[in-house]
Length: 210
Image 1 (cartoon, rainbow, N blue to C red):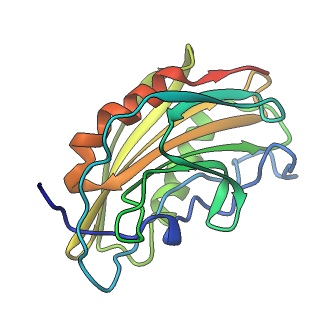
Image 2 (image 1 turned 30 degrees about the horizontal axis):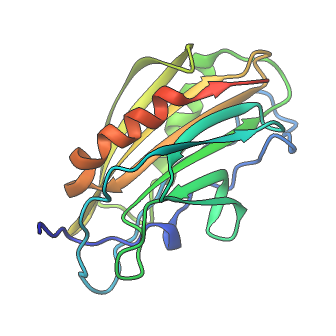
């Protein structure tokens, strides 16, 4: 069985101190909140194997206006504790650590803005927030669709010495231009290629419902 370098995920998940849809900010421009992801290497190297493929089930948030499918054997956690996002889904733990996470966060502000303006600010804040003193942050960005809506996406490669990690963020704007939903998939880089199909499948099921 192939083993991989380890990295603690849920314990150090910093999907930013961003608000849920129940909280707004009084500064409409630039968008003052961001969903970002952070990994911090643990003291040891326990190793990870990619989680097996499993059936999906649907998570619906009527209050936040979205739904998304996630693997049935992944653990759902609502905002709070180790999940500062609106909702987080963690892969099955190995040796007490979670090798991959998917998070959805709804961010809000007061005045309508464009997707490009929101993304420009979100991306810069994401780069600034991607971990504790990362040695390097590199990434690509582009246009895509999420839930049939125009979206922005970026893939980040993060280097904490011996433990590289990869995260993909995709952002879609709410209908009135005063909110956005950011979907993040993240794992140790060495198992990213194994988990990317799962992240892609989850992204394909996302839909705005509000």
